[in-house]
Length: 242
Image (cartoon, rainbow, N blue to C red):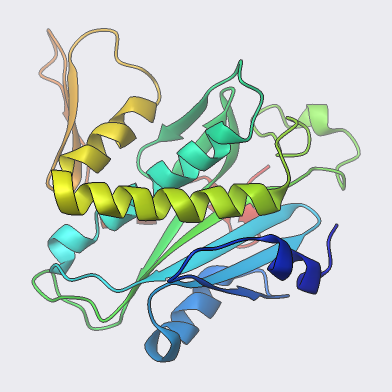
């Protein structure tokens, strides 16, 4: 594993990103603490045996009821970054709203923080998108005993530094598409990765909810995005569940 200094110098990030490599596992909390003083583009990275964690500070211009969809943008950027650095014959998929799977096994997921006191119609002073990925499972005596999860190392992903750099670039790409082509340019890309694929019917995002219209049963409508994240089961206090 590279040292903190080697990691910082190897990851080529375009403006406005500025990278902080931290020993703390909770990059979401550290990025939120830095957000008021350091602002947009602050990217906090933690690499340790078993875990790759990152978080980026955002400063939206829209009220929270729209700005929160930046979470889906972060998930799309993460999914595309992983897909660019993995074996090509297996799929990177998303489970609404915040879990990442690779070849049907849990790889990690996304987290989100919003400046305290922000109401639905308020423009947040800052938001943080964070991701946690299972880097390896070397500490497990029998990884086969945990078939529901996998890791970057076991699946032959490219180095973490390359994934982080690609994630940062994809974030910029999708914010540009949101600005010039509308939010649908982001949410449609998100829907392309949602598991399981729909064989019949229509899946779309309405406001902050995932909606599925299926012949014969009337379909399904998710809870609001932030509520759905609170009920997600891909992680515990120690990070992604194995």
